[in-house]
Length: 489
Ligand code: SIN
Image (cartoon, rainbow, N blue to C red; front, side):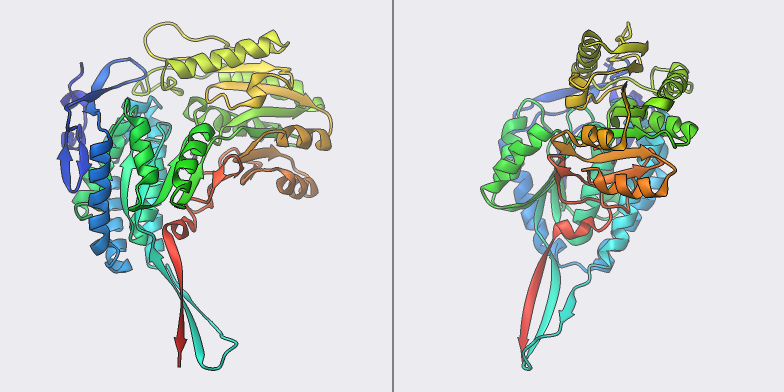
């Protein structure tokens, strides 16, 4: 095992191998641990505690106690602490990016990008904290004055995925802290070190004991997740992950009518019309499809290309994909890293085999790569039929599945023929079409003539079975209650 001190950080004290409850770094009561491995090398990076129900209850209790004082702090106080936290994240950006690469596998340049995205949520919500305005509403009655105030909702359960080990924590935690809420976080067992390092920096910034708590688990995930959704002291659940898990957690939270934010799976359509700038469309597809080696909820999953530009687009896309350098994210030449684990590789394999069996053409890649680590060759398939698995469910891997279409009406029908609706993309230079298609796509977020939509300032979220609520942007609202007060004169 590579000892945690060998992770090569400039500040080794950022590598935390214990969970954090009530202001203390703690082991599991029963002493169990979980191994965390580097998906590029399969080497062990270190261990974290395998916690269960008892620790989860303790963490919720600590958060409930801390809420009594944190919720009473001024917005300016919380702004100042979050600004300091942001400053510390910037100071330690090399270490934080390295941790992301080690545990998630994404190349260092991309990990630095995630770090910047992650820190931008803390900066954004620091500035949102001081703008949680209420309002006054003119009353129809002469002896009444109406006032509306915003109040923090309470203890928040935060459950995050491994594809953005840092940014999915700060997108939720930043909003929660800014609003005056306290939190219990369950980071993914695959990538806990980024979350724990962030908590270490938050405490250095002055976040008081009990305001942030972290429970780590893998084998006990069901009981921990259940408690985080059912405990009456928890007033809100925020989850990013798959749609099936989202539905289960939503059901658990329904028992106490908790407020819920869900960012679940996508199956993003990416459409190239014949009036598009093809170079821009290829560049957009490369970043949109292969960011995080295809492991983002907003990745293009179904690529529809109009007949007359189909062959040109396919060959230019394949040429760019052939130039990728797949490998360990710490190697400076690497452009694309591994998948998170073998199950992820198997899913891509299944989608490729299914599409080929149904008549798709292999243009590039198509198989897992030999040796250590969970690598799959970046793949381009052409003429993927409508009934292929890849059209029905998101691959979450480096597979660009191309389908030819003839008309705008046909492609909109294909694009919307899915139960989910997170992001959608299209390329066209016809301004009328841009408006029509942007309005017609059944998704929460649209990229027109761009493959990159993610920013801290936007309302991030989906429709249909892709989720509930919006994060980033005005997402602080999701962590506050609106209270109306009538003043009799
Ligand atoms: C996700 O994959 O869940 C988030 C993607 C993003 O924020 O860009």
